Image 1: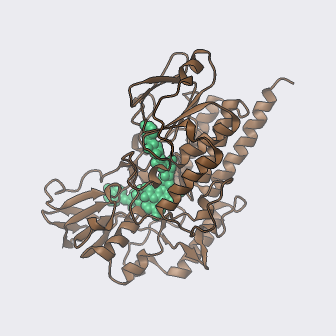
Image 2: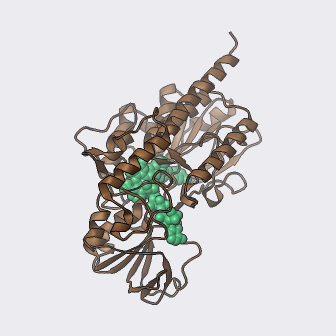
Image 3: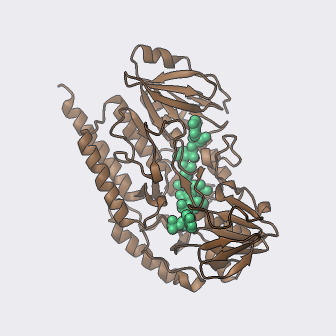
Length: 455
Ligand SMILES: Cc1cc2nc3c(=O)[nH]c(=O)nc-3n(C[C@H](O)[C@H](O)[C@H](O)COP(=O)(O)OP(=O)(O)OC[C@H]3O[C@@H](n4cnc5c(N)ncnc54)[C@H](O)[C@@H]3O)c2cc1C
Ligand SMILES: NC(=O)c1ccc[n+]([C@@H]2O[C@H](COP(=O)([O-])OP(=O)(O)OC[C@H]3O[C@@H](n4cnc5c(N)ncnc54)[C@H](OP(=O)(O)O)[C@@H]3O)[C@@H](O)[C@H]2O)c1
């Protein structure tokens, strides 16, 4: 592993003579996908990474200080759906490997394609400003400044804790401990305690299951029901069943909903709330273990938290329990600490980008991995990166600004119509449909660029 911390020497000179040089913020699974596409096309770039390793979220106790990984974390999108198209995960890996396998896979990917020397570890991007000539002035965490022609943002969107808003009455005087799922690392934090876990996303599932083995009692509070999707159906990882660019989303989800219902019955049978939506209209909650632990009485379902006493939690149904620890599994905020808010921000997690990549008002700025898929992020980040790299080389051409703004507005309306209204669903995409959309966009933009190329 490289421990390069020196800022690159080529950046200033590249800017001075108007050459192309890209900056990639972050070397998580999205940043390395972007870096690989640049590397393969010979586009000069520097990738800055706060931590000492690639892999971001998947590096347990990452020195970057922002990984949400915990000791028991396994992927919930299966190995074959999560791997990059040109670098399969080892067949010796299980279907749902643990975080350290995944982190090693990302490390191997970088070495396989040979661009580790372009990643500057332990060096973050502190501030970005746009110069009058359209270039990006980057201040790094060591105080040095660099200028780049293109900027690819891959800083992740699962690290900035979203606490309940507004805070529950009594949370300021509760004498037990309150943590966010981001701060959960290992079972010892739960051992012997009366624990209330809030939220039925994937963090809530995993932490409630861990608590069910280590805490004294485990309560799972939720304000809305979720369809819990098992990891396997018919002996196959569930995300490998029926996924295809050719099958329309509504058909895929209706069939999946029926199969899951036949296999597991109703959520209410396990004491959970009845979901107020059908499958495919919320980010999937995947767990092979939660229903089993509920059925054993090892997890006690509860409605939403109403208030906290000094050592108690009261729920919406009026019931009250003793609590030593409340774990808020209430999701994340999308933030870009290196941008001034008036330059680019995501208020209430709303992001205005064409094809979920290109902000129409800021040329040569790109976001990779800034999607929340019903499926894995990595192959999506890879395809987004291809589009970005093709744009930098001129092989892909964007439509006009009004066309981009129209697409953004239509997408937002569709997203709001389809998904349960929640800040967790602002950047939601369907894996198969969005992958197809990107493929068609590469073809369309490519044709557009070719049409403009003089014969
Ligand atoms: C607990 C948990 C489990 C998950 N499980 C799955 C799963 O099974 N499958 C799936 O597809 N997705 C899963 N996700 C979603 C997760 O976002 C992706 O797996 C993946 O981590 C996204 O990669 P990324 O590179 O976009 O972001 P990250 O992994 O967050 O990486 C971002 C990188 O950018 C760096 N960085 C940030 N700011 C700066 C800066 N200013 N300067 C320099 N570097 C910076 C960080 O240090 C980090 O290395 C999970 C998320 C969580 C929280
Ligand atoms: N590999 C894995 O096994 C794994 C494990 C953990 C996380 N992840 C991934 O990490 C990402 C984040 O997941 P997450 O579970 O941390 O967050 P999330 O998906 O955003 O879920 C947040 C949960 O908290 C609830 N919530 C939010 N604010 C609330 C409030 N004020 N009061 C009551 N409930 C509230 C939400 O309910 P509403 O629906 O009503 O908003 C939802 O149930 C997702 O992509 C997920 O797939 C994966």
